[in-house]
Amino acid sequence: MRSYDVIVAGGGHNGLVAAAYLAGAGRRVLVLERLDHVGGLAISAQPFPGVDVRLSRYSYLVSLLPSRVARDLGLDLELRRRRYASYTPKGDTGLLVDNEDAARTAASFAAVTGGAADHKAWQDFYGMTARVARTLAPTLLEPLRTPAEIERLVGAEAWRELFQRPIGQTVDERFGDDTVRGVVLTDALIGTYADPATDLLANRCFLYHVIGDGTGEWNVPVGGMGAVSGALEAVARRAGAEIRTGAEIIGISPSGEVAFVDADGEHAVNGGHVLVNLPPAVLDRLLGRAPSTVPEGAQLKVNMVLSRLPKLKDSSVDAMAAFSGTFHINEGREQLATAFAQAARGEIPELPPAEVYCHSLTDSSILGPGLRGRAETMTLFGLHMPARLFRENPDKARDDALHATFASINSVLAEPIEDCLLQTPDGAPCVEVKSPVDLEREAGLPGGHIFHTDLSWPYADDGRGGWGVETEHERILLCGAGARRGGGVSGIGGHNAAMALLRP
Image (cartoon, rainbow, N blue to C red; front, side, top):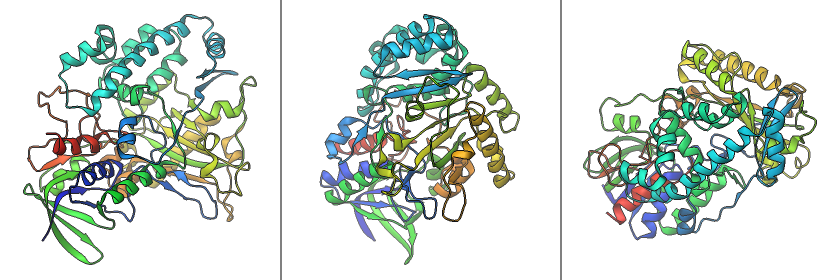
């Protein structure tokens, strides 16, 4: 049996971060990946035959990846800032948040809300979240702090408003306009099925969406998400990590033994430590026990290629501005609540809340030379689409969800989105749909949960301390999204697992 200092179970981006740090420190590292490629959900793909476009198939923007990790590893990666944060259509007008024109943003608030109060509340609220981001983000790469330490760090107001009471209550008190409330609350619901009026899970999701790298900005990876994983793979290999794809792990022992199968049959290797870049429910199965949690994803991902940008009802806003940031679709406060209630009854929401953006407007490199200037990509992320809705009849439910989602986006456009879709050489529209059940089947994510499990508080609320990667088995550590402070394309789980070995 071959032995390694560290075996990394799963070649997603977190596993590659851990492998790069540890191999760079001289450890003998083996990465085992079930698929024929590394990267997990941070990959690019060409899903439409004959259409030269590399789409970010699953994850699509980068906020949580710390600059410190990129510097430590020397990543060859460019993250490009989006000028426009968001556009939210409302009737024949809309709310445009322009990162580089404060006066234009203020005027847009006034046009939508009828006054200046919500814009002032917006500035105050996001001033508070910016201060939290600057102080909290660095702690994500350190051993876990206690709740009392985090409270002292962020201040009493932020602790009360963001950590102690449901984010929906905070938003309802601070903002008067339904549209503005919804724009704020969407960050509490991405990939998370929760009622923000009552469930602190929404608070945890919100925190992860506003503290990334100390700024909370969501940036475009040049070359697509595959460029992120590609850069990490290159660093890990240069450092000496051995990476095997097509190697499916079938068992993990607390002693450090890992069994896997590949094209040549069944094998076993031994590790001084095993770093698990797999959902906790999968680790439970590999350890031979029942899962301690049953996660459930709650999103619909739709990838599209357009022949042109759709027309807006709002003639005062250019479509390039509206779609290069996050374009909110029927995500008002009450619309979010209605969709949540309908999904809770087992129904596809009648008017699904969703958001889109067009990667190619910021980074045209993902388009083949023949399509630049002739096509644009569009990524849609739908909310309140829990896996339970797709269990009984996955194909029909997926079609129904897409139909409802297209009706939703069409309700805020001046023309049907279907009229703007590019076609493949065979005449098929360039549309790809992924439900939670699809992610469960294709990516091995229980329940299709994009965070592996429900997001945790970024501190030691369980009293355990450490790096947030420890398990009950000394030689087995979590290094993926399921680690405390894991989730999103961050590399934080991989960094912290590596540090648990290098700086115990």
